[in-house]
Length: 411
Image (cartoon, rainbow, N blue to C red; front, side, top):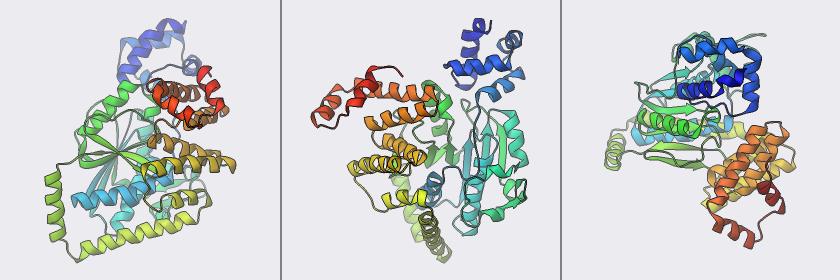
């Protein structure tokens, strides 16, 4: 029986990739794709080609161009412009970590090419890496079905693609800026990056692996460089001197600290040496941000995010805003948009019990029992570690009776 290999295979996979097989559904997938005698060579040979097939079975990732446009706009209209202002860098190196079949890496390149065309940067290079050879091979070709563009592209981006009725191809000059390779995120890389984007990867990993990977990312960043994860994929304190920065109702990210004096010196030098073209670049950044705002306001499902982030908010206001927006979207029947805001609320306040409750219900109704139980377990952990917070919430009259059943009964 396949169960006889459970412990050994699970530990071997965890050691190789950081992926833990802890759900019945995962083992059912393995049973459907492998026979008992096929698994033995995996345990005997850590480089056996059958590992690639196992990765493909366990790591089914959905990716497409311009996925999560709100977060992408935050990266390219706020996070990177601030980074350029702080460092004076004009050539950017970006890592799409866990890039799957490449659509995300190419999306990052499209944004960077737009910045280059606008004169905001001089040049860029994107590296996309993935554990699966099959995915890397697809990414290198840069050709996809039209379903890969199921989100509207920002204005002008279609010029970077060759579109037909049945396919989408990335233009050759854009492909030349993107390098794909096989890579395990648990292993160090030789390059240093200005930005690391690793979205929808940590959901597969155990907590120790997440910490180890974030440490590797830290050592692969320039000072003031940034790490972007998917929403609510990591809720613990970050390692090293990474700090957490939130953009209200849009995203949160990790930033590597820099030496303060060095930063001031670079800023002063950059300011003194600023020529006319660099002033124009700053103006162009503002124009791009204004253009982004116009595009956002034309999309009803994203308008609420634009409104909520129009003015700086205090921490308390930010938390309330995300939860309020989530419930507004729920009442309107926009479950996916509400799902985004509940995750954002957890970034801003890990004690947002209503967000845990609603997210557990959301995933339970979608049939994802594992994720639903995970949010319930996180709520247990958070509230168990701070009973005084529970008492405070109850005394303030903000405790909802359904939460008792939620916390006292296993999903």
